[in-house]
Length: 233
Length: 217
Image (tube, rainbow over all chains, first blue to last red; front, top):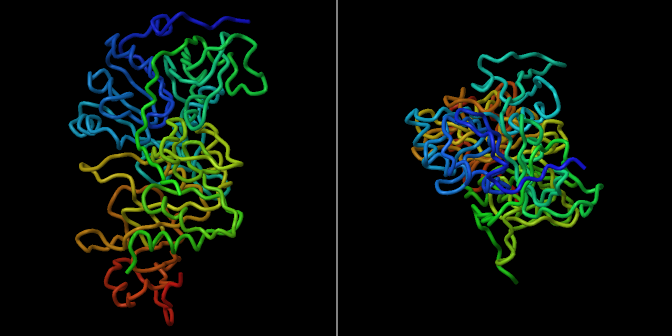
């Protein structure tokens, strides 16, 4: 077993510097790497480029980094839940690249899988495809989208072991698996770091080869963004 | 004239047995409540669930089980969870049979705009560009006019596009229309709405062929 376990979030984020590019898993506030984000706020690194589907809310998730103006550029698909984000974007303080959600996922996956670029129909004929190479296949138009290049990927899983194997839960899976191995260093934080051998190899979502560092996360808030319920009876 | 629930009810009639359906945020989400109970349909949410069920009972909300609108939901028996790349493989690979989404503007050639108002509102396209570029079968749920009474069914979209030539069918508070090579073809009128009402509310080319029936529910 090649040991990926590190003692804590401090060790997990060793080497993080100003002006780096990070991938961060999560959809809305579901499945976000809460411990890594909190540590990035404490470290005070700035000039960051963040690749993340959303930008958190004003006081949680990536919103915490935005408040401190640590982020220079966001690459996201949807940022509607964050007033501070919208303010920084409209005032020009924050550089924002909005891209289709499936393209965001596939540019991560391309980096993970060793493809330099992929063709997608998404965004053809819109401002998303402006300045990009396009090509026709079987009568339909596609846009060439390049694999991301990132220094760190911060992902969050439900369970993991010292070998770096990961299992996700529910829709908290989202972008986390496709970011594993898509950056130079992948840091996984887990709700439960279980003893080696406890995870069934048949049930592993991401094999440890895609993960460089894994640690037991602490004090997960797992905030719900839109609490919707139905009445009984 | 229909309200939002009426639009959802009319669109629900388009959902057929055996369909995998992706519902957008807003009116489309309501469609799930009105699909016939004697058919089998599975709802996909692009954040990574197929077989999405209703909202949970109070006290059973799970932060790890949400839909694309970030609302807490449940998963039905037979449901599955998956990552974002696989989710969009279902969409781009045309495994999802029907996409229902909202729009700010639709043009008579099937162009759609629903993600950005320059200088004012920039929330992002989310999965909408992937959905409209890929789906064979797209129904748009929208109000026929904006709050000022101006038509949202146009000759040409004025807002930044989400997709080109992709919308097939539109259900509004006034009408059901089909996008054809020559313009918006009027198929049905909402209850109490005349053909002239629809004409007046449509800036794009409107094709009226014979008697236009009233919607049936």
